[in-house]
Image (cartoon, rainbow, N blue to C red; front, side, top):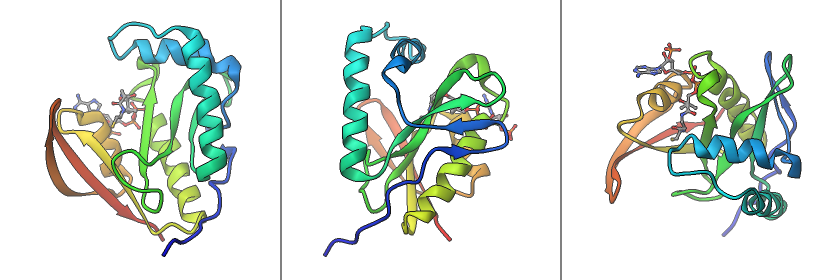
Length: 168
Ligand SMILES: CC(C)(COP(=O)(O)OP(=O)(O)OC[C@H]1O[C@@H](n2cnc3c(N)ncnc32)[C@H](O)[C@@H]1OP(=O)(O)O)[C@@H](O)C(=O)NCCC(=O)NCCS
C-alpha cells in the first residue's frame, strides 16, 4: 500500500536564508561547491544536466534538495533538502552541504530546521539522516535538530551513523 504526500512546499524562508528551486544559472557555483569535496571540479555542463535531473526528479517525487541563498547577500551558499538516499520516499533523508567560507554560523541548522517543518507539512511522520561517524559538524547539526542515533552500519568508506527524527 502506498501513501501519497503533499509536495515539499518551497520556496522556504528563514530569518537569514531562502531555500528556492534550482536554476540552470546555479551550475558554476554548484561546481565550486562540489570541488570543495577535494576530488576535482566537475565539468559545468555535467552539473547543468544534474540540475535538470533534480528538477525532473522533484516533479516525480515531490521532494527536493534546494539551493540555499542568503537573503541579505543574495549569494548561493549551498543546498539543503530531502533525498531518498539510503532510505525511502516515505521516510527520506535530510541532506545539506555548504561552502566552507560560511561554516560555523548556524546556517545548516537554520536551513535544515525549515526543511523539517516543510517535511512535516507534506504529511510525513519520520525523517532520517545517514552520516559518516567522522563528520562531527554534521552530527552536531542533527543533534541540535533533535535527531537521535538509531544504528551504525559499515560501508566501503567507513562507519555510517543512521539518525532519525519523528515529525510532529
Ligand atoms: C555539515 C555542514 C553543512 C554544517 O554546516 P554549518 O552551517 O557549519 O552548521 P552549523 O553552524 O549550523 O552547526 C555546526 C555545529 O557543529 C559544530 N562543529 C563544527 N566543527 C566541529 C568540530 N570539529 N568538532 C565539534 N563540533 C564542531 C559547530 O560548533 C556547531 O555546533 P554549535 O552550534 O553547538 O556550536 C558543513 O560542515 C558542510 O557543508 N560540510 C560538508 C558537507 C557535509 O558534510 N554534509 C553533510 C553530509 S551528511
